[in-house]
Image (cartoon, rainbow, N blue to C red; front, side, top):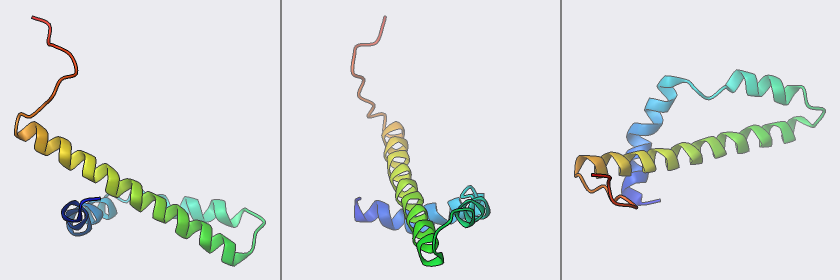
Length: 84
């Protein structure tokens, strides 16, 4: 990811996501606790899922930022001609 977009996500996007509270921490903990695995493995799974969520969120932020800037600058490229 572009370092500028990553920095924007780290300083803005991540805090917005945290405020929204969409990551189901409690539900995930309940599901992981129901698995018959060792505690250290449970923690590794939780951390990995959290990392995937963070990576997906950063990628989604980058795509949204790019789309927003493209729309703002009217630089939309259409794959086919518009109907008249």
